[in-house]
Image (cartoon, rainbow, N blue to C red; front, side, top):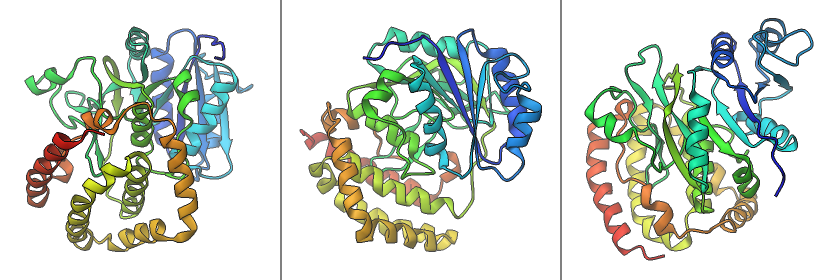
Amino acid sequence: MTASNGRTSVIVVAHGHRAYLADCVRALERAAPAGTRLILVDNASTDGTAEFVRSDILTPDGTATKGGLPAIFIASDKNLGFSGGNNLGFDLALRDEDEFIYLLNPDTEAQPGFLEAAWRVMTAHPAAGVVQSLLYLHPDTSRLNSWGNEIHFLGFGYAGGESVLADSVEARRHLVVRDIAYASGAGMLIRTSCLRAIGNLDEELFAYHEDLEFSWRARLAGWRVLLAPESVVWHKYEFSRSVQKWYWMERNRFLVTGWLYSIPTLIVLLPALIVTELALWLFAVKGGWWREKLRAYGYVLDPRHWISFARTRRAKQSLRRRSDREVTRLLTGVIVFERMASPIVAFGNVILGVYWRLVRLVMFW
């Protein structure tokens, strides 16, 4: 195993986030303890982000922020997506033998003690590979953004506890150190030994589900994914209503479940997958994103992608140290996300919730 220098690199990837970066970096300067380095990546922004970073964020020699935080700036000449942009930082941190990497969205403000609290959870649990901070909404910081993200067994991902009052009884039950289905890429600490073991973020996903797949893959390989409730980050979260996002979400949902589930699990889930696909077409037509859904089908059904899919699946399955019964313990059969609430979702929760409980009863593999 490679020796560590004990440093944590905080990676911030920006793509059109010029308006957020000053607040993000200034908060990080106040909150980051000694031994922290910022790796700031501009993902080919077209809003002048790179020029703004060089003139307003960094010192003239580019080795630190103007507030004194050691820093490295990487300007990509093309948009590599969330995965590719963070992987540029991963490669640098791994080359420099850092002990931890922290992923931080540019639309966040990390609070003092956020990194120390995440470190404490990580070091107290040697099997932990990923630790998520507790994300609060901003500017209404009385409400949560995520107490750990949820994975529906059909591959949908959503923020757990989104919009719940932080001082509510419901929140207090969840705000303990515990295993979570997946960590939000908006604020999560990664042990570099875990990263070396399971590999970087998957660049084929490009946008959406990258953090979901990474956490699922880590858990498949035997690592734990935990919540650090005393590690606090404010998130200026805006629910995207872009039609384009549905292509990435649907395509990537198919890829992730196809890569990470075992064959027996895929077989028993097939009826639910088919019925849900039919129901999703109602949403797609009503929401005007049926073309994006067709594009997602076109991608996964294109024979040119099948060899790559099989190769990727073999590589990820080769990491398996846990059975599907163990890995899916934290998956859910319901979607409890305020911004997606509808009578159809409520009805689907009842049917699919029962289906998933039955599958879990017979799942012995």
